[in-house]
Image (cartoon, rainbow, N blue to C red; front, side, top):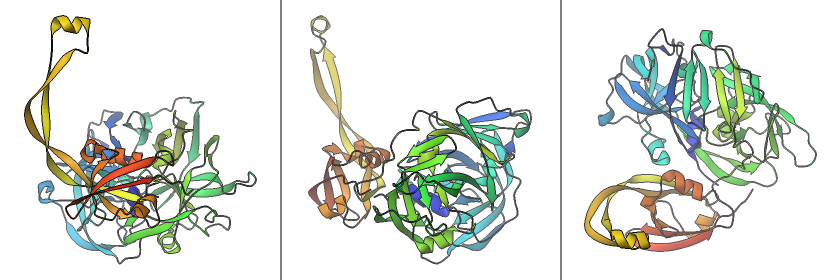
Length: 446
């Protein structure tokens, strides 16, 4: 029941505009054969620091996009764009194309990797507001051009990426690995998989899925791309996310299984797009959906674009369950506020401490003010637990289960709503200056 950071994968086919294929990234030091990069992992998404024309910005690594996109540039993030012209972009959703800028011949660096001829698409207005939805500042998305010239190892558990020169890379023997050929269409990678759609019997359906590190869900499937791909009987209708051209609607459900050769993942959550969004997404007619980060994070992943293959090695989370937001509330970051905190000093008598380690005295000697995050409700799903409790869009969250909201990260709040069904959630909300109490229980609809 979540409107998650799926808005990122909603960019996966926004461009009808084509540009010449850039050279992509290469090693800054020609003698190096590999480069390690650490990343942040928030809401199932990989966040890396890219330096654009000398300015370091935060980007999401998204294998589902074939362009480098900027969409959150402020005066403080001024980067000086080169060779700029206006273009229009069409995204998923029901709206009209949006205005953007196309900028050529930019220099982009990632630690020891560089591209001196990078084309950027700059969305003039930040329609997606990813920073609020992620809880940290996000400036853009990078995909194909960063991956195309390397063998790229992504270790989700260690939060490390290693870029290898293909000519120097030798894969180690791995009994716990599976290797898959990649199909590319418009510089986006597709993999063949199998899904079990019916709880009766064990029949499997072959599907071709976009590999989308920028999608936070497990699976998307497109109805009617095959006769058997239909929303199961048990589902709920939801806003799946936001694209450049508006809201994207569909159904959320589960299927019994997805099979990636010898790897079987049971009861993954699946989103089924509405017909309009499906039509916008299917420029590649053989495509049946997407495989997202909620699946990919269960593996160590090697992208090998030069040799058109991908390798998966299972990690310890392979068999963990697939969860979703059962509150019906989408929470976003809404800025920082000054919070008064007590500075407490603790003193202990050295003799008494030996006799009783808990024998200490605390004194409040001063107060300090610190900036803390604030959160608000961005949307409420109708007939959801949060909606039926009376919580409304734009309500400010003061406390959750007795704990001040600023003591949570945004990710912790989202994870709280994914815990076991039936869990009671108590919230103290501020609405138009008035504090109000609400409570509800998490409800599993699928």
